[in-house]
Image (cartoon, rainbow, N blue to C red; front, side):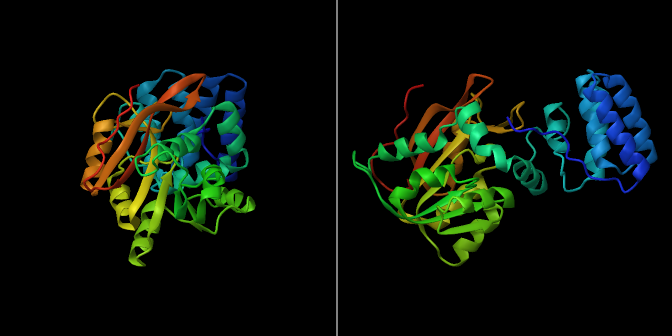
Length: 324
């Protein structure tokens, strides 16, 4: 699980900054009550200090002060319009505000910029992540593959991260493009020398630009990226516009038994299978397979996930739905 604690951003007031760091020292020693008291004094001195408000919310939450935590996270949100610390997600987790608010670009970018240098080891060794492998197996089992290895002229790796998906698919792709919001993740991917083209951008803007140039891809991959996107409908529609006529759209999501979108305690999103089928149909896409599997483990427990492969809606083989 990625650390979602506050990243220090100075208040511009040296005294307030020192108080903030003193509060964190107290929290590290286990004296949460003292830390909260110091942070209250800090935000009284500098009411717009978003980082201190966020830390106060987190400490009050640990102390079991639900009302106080919500109040502090609301102050964080108000002081930080870009939601750099993810206060809106914390409010949703505590049952206040939108139930599944979108993650801000600033929050996602800093989250993965911080995480880039240890991302590969954390996912593959600690979380038993196997998203790309499951997607490759699902693609090989589609009716289009007919039991043989496929080759793709062009592939788009959405949210490519450090290139775990690119590394697996590179041998069967002629031209590989990757896009990610985090410059640090893109730098890690570039160092591997796997991609013909790498772009730092948010997915929606990138797909709109590709559509405007009439670029088409034979395979669009999204491995473990949609867990950071609440509403997948705009992306599904945008993918449909850049997908070649016989192209494949392969992706993973975390899931839940309900119908729609749910923000999990891990601050990742889960998407219900009925929701996926609905947004794919609205985008003019048809699922070839939607299979329940565990893409990763969390604290040793398999995480409920779905592995899906879709194409443009045409008359063809029926949808396959694998048993749990």
